Length: 242
Figure 1 (tube, rainbow, N blue to C red):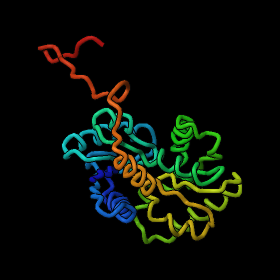
Figure 2 (figure 1 turned 90 degrees about the vertical axis):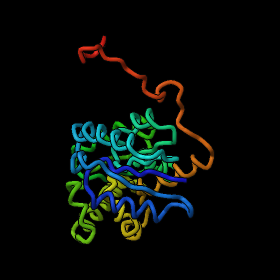
Figure 3 (figure 1 turned 135 degrees about the horizontal axis):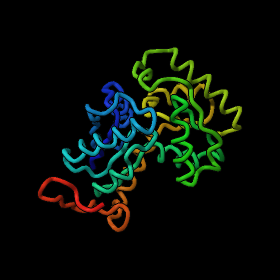
Figure 4 (figure 1 turned 120 degrees about the vertical axis):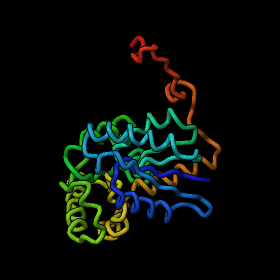
């Protein structure tokens, strides 16, 4: 099987880090292809960045060979619903995957993301996924997304580790969810330090998508995720009725 792992932002180092994790956790025989749109914002930090990235992500996917499944490697689950309309294989965002994985491993979990401006998006997603009660808090480490590009920066691990210790105690949570695809390289070290399950969405999404493909399941094309309808424009180039 082939899984296309899409980093919706344009950070090449982050795409490489995400690809490394996906290839490490995938099953033997699974082909992982990672990509990221070069025209997207360098990082996704808020609604505007997410809207811009969705457009460019969809453009990249339409020019790629069809894959058996897709992973959207942004914790905001940027453009997941739109992508589900244009492809047939299962599509999973790392936010949804990580939250569901955490709900299977712990009674309650906390999410640690990068900046405060991302917290409302993630809180709304948790509620939409029916996990608002299991998620005891979404917190920001006050780290810009692009600061995670340097995997050798020990100060980043120290900041994230301290923040994680604080929020687990505050929320009385039993597991930590990493709220950014750029944190994927920190998961193993954090789990060893914290002593609780640390869920990385890239790993979770790859595993879930593999399982869906093996089960022969695809995205429903009846209803909301049906392929987009062809639209006609008038001869003068203007759109038709709204």
